[in-house]
Length: 197
Length: 214
Length: 181
Image (cartoon, rainbow over all chains, first blue to last red):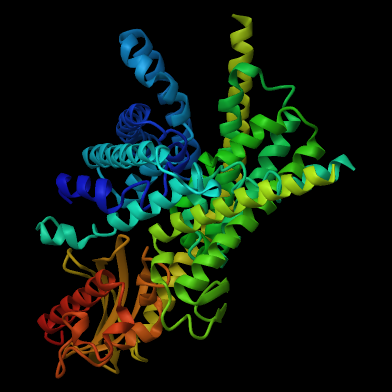
């Protein structure tokens, strides 16, 4: 599978939020304004890309040689937790301004399904290291795309009269549903038509 | 009677899905068939029960500074146990739940209950809390799955282990021309939105009547 | 320093206990999982064999045909079972399809897939695969769902249908290229 095909797949066809429902908690929780949505998206993209590579390496060079594949889940989540912690410390030291923008989102990312999800999907799909990296990057970009679009919708919704019971989370879900309908236009025939599959 | 309260609060008043809004990914990802909802609900309940009991029992031993990694190890171990046991003994359920099974690790309900409840309460209360939350989660999943499957496919799959071992109720009229979109991703989000609105209304309604009585 | 050591030791102890526990459970479940997978493959191959005797497994073409099992009627080769890989809506579909020596489909069954329940997942049902039975030599296999007697059976899941039917067509061609050997 070419790298472009992988990117199109995970940004559009298998969009993590709108198709696979991974990372819905922050999607609903942090999409109230577009600035923090972009921050969250960038932080997630960074972590999914790095975590994909690290988890691939752990699985291929540590778990498989020692016949420990059944420790996949437990080792991946520990790697991700440690990685998020490390990223937080590095960013704080290296770039205080970036830390100010992303810092508050980083602790939330450990329990974001998208990160563990893409790490496991990479192994299931049998991607190599570079493919895993692109899949991770694309999954994060797809997440960013969905959360930024959503935050724009919600900013508009703030100014629109909405029935009382639907205010806030319910209307956010319904808007997300309508976005998902739009994303159904992307399916794997897109790859065929672009001569990528 | 306070023990009873720990058990029942998860079912409606603090329902993890509709009221606290935790653990959304599997809630929407696996609810295409009622049977999958049962499988996911049971798996989550088992993990929740195990992790709540262990974390509550170890709450005096685990130092505060490493409690989150320690919880994650405990939770991930129970998830791996569920994965291996399902894979070995009920492969049909294992295949149907797919990637959402390992993702129970990051289901916020479990870490949330560990952090908010199990590390402050006794083993018995934590176990009851886990069972209540597990039932609440399973009921919520079954409700979403039932709506999606009845209207989206015109069937109710109560049991489905293989082509010969299954129990599917077919609803005449709906199964010929179902609202297919409900079984797809978009339908899940729409159903969730309307149900959440319903529960907001219900909670408010309840508060008003209770307020009226007092 | 002593504080750190204690913390590290506690975390290490928890991890060690967890790994030992998991290793023990893995000892019990791993053979069972391997056995299940093997049994499932045997059952699928038996189900599509059409009552013929199965011969020795041969390698496929390294692309969409994973392996070939010749079917014998006495000493004569009566057909072949092919394990085929194709892509559906939700990812890879692996299926076993049997053909007579002319390339007509005898039977077909999905081994694994991740299609949408109620739509693409219907390919797991026997009525779905029956749409292909007998086609491939005198009568052609369907190229698209419009070639079917009732296209509405697969509506909403054309991607799955295209994946399955193209794999079956490719398999039929492969069987003809074997020329009965």
